[in-house]
Amino acid sequence: MKNDLTFVNITAERGKKAHGFTTVTPEIQIPVTVINGRQDGPLLLITAGIHGGEYPCIETATKLAKEIDPAKINGGVVIINCVNTAAFYARVSYISPLDGKNINRLFPGDPNGTAGDKLAYFLTENYQKRADFYLDLHGGDLHEKLPPYVYRPGVGDEAVLQKSYDRAKYINAKYMVKSKSTTGAYNSRAILGIPCLLIERGGMGLWSEKEVADYKEDVYNIMAYLKITDKEPVLPKTPRKEMTDVIYLDADADGMWHCEFDTEQEIKQGQRLGYITDIFGNVIKEYFAEIDGTVLYIATSLAITAGTAIFTYGK
Image (cartoon, rainbow, N blue to C red):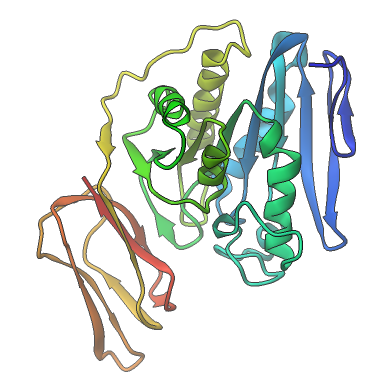
């Protein structure tokens, strides 16, 4: 690593940090913190707020950006405090209000696409491709409920997948889920050859100091594992459940969603998970469990639109 660490328009000298806004397009500016350590070492990229209503991770990124002391780390840490600032300030779930797209479904992006495509491409080219390890911080959105869990990539070079899995063991979460997606920010990064993880914590438009503290503990533990700090990483004492067979349900119609299970409940094959009615209360769609498993995620809103996530379970 050179003495100066520069990402687009933000430069931090050796042993210093710098922060500011980086312009992606005239309508998109992202807040970035560049922390340049005391000596050479790996580069960790952290993103938060790809979905603007996931508050615990955004608050965590903001606090980490202020707390991490460049004089006490090796290598560098780059934090994008909130990727989807338009959604954050508009208090919008899932999508960017600039084009109505879910940014996390657009990676590696398209420089000739709409706002979300361009943002995904900008992050891929200017940040992700330079990282030695990538942590994407998420959580339940404004209408979502979930327990703490960590996603590990399931598509890519086996060595990259194994490194990601090894690091996932140091995340203090109750569940570890193997993902088969290819378009998410961290999935796309794994396919490009960089180990990465996605952590989920919190939801329903709320955040707490406890959630932020737990999130920070995860990040600092990964920093220790990567030798960015001089501390030793600590394996969580709480046993975790690893899931490799996960089913994601999306709504088939606009309507009113009635969920019949809570997160972390056990379900049996054939049980009804929930149903959608029209505005007059007539049932238009029912959902039944295809396998035995544990409920990982539920949509908590009564209103639902076709194509949006409503229920996740697996084993």
